[in-house]
Length: 333
View (cartoon, rainbow, N blue to C red):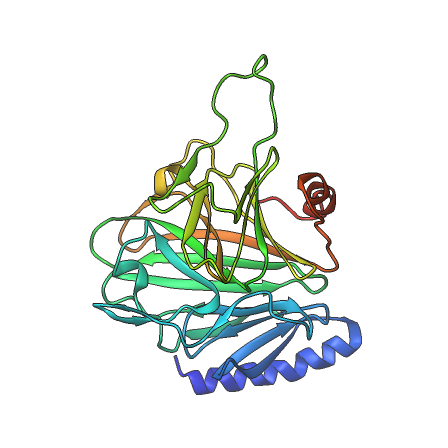
């Protein structure tokens, strides 16, 4: 794809978007520099905005209320060195394929991606085929014309010559200083139900006595602590279909599906969270799929952002604060 020609096409669309915004509140598309990265694109509807990269990626590097602080982390100088080269987390949201293993999971994504507009509200980002895996990654990012809803469609295509078993893996690095909130399964009495409700998976380094964990009747919570430079991670089979991150009075909510009876990576996890110091990831995955040559696995998340949210102290206050907000989000199957 001729990126310079496509850039011109997108800039032309920006003008149309600004005109539409003045007339009725449509989404605008604007070329910007962000995090010292040129050729980024910002989608905005006047309430919320997302910024995607095109010189690297595919990545969503920013999700925020319009003009407000970024809810995603910005870590432009970090790098993970592998035999395939340096992978740079950068921050924000990315697409991997599970299960995690080096160097496959850390395949560098430091080159430009192809990009095209999607209707009047989105942009599609397509990476070159990963040379070590034969997988091509694609993210389609669409911002609703009003409100904060962002729909991210993740696609993995097998361009190789044999089947590959994988799961689409959507990882979001959020800004430090907050707490991840994962829902427990609804309470049922032992008198009424005796079968297990939800697997919870621990890693070798998981320590549930760590003060960053809060295990309640309704929620599992993990907070960042920049003085605690020790990794913590947990995974669950999340049948409630959402995870949230509360930070500085804002609540970021991810919606994703759960397929009963499907196989998921990491001993049955479709939702995970990881922290180390100020670093925090909120992750979800699709089912494991044996992807035939030429086939594509698709996985969707919906994002929401709420402002002026006080989660208080204790689980009762947390529940009272977030339950009506989660009810405003749309489940995914």
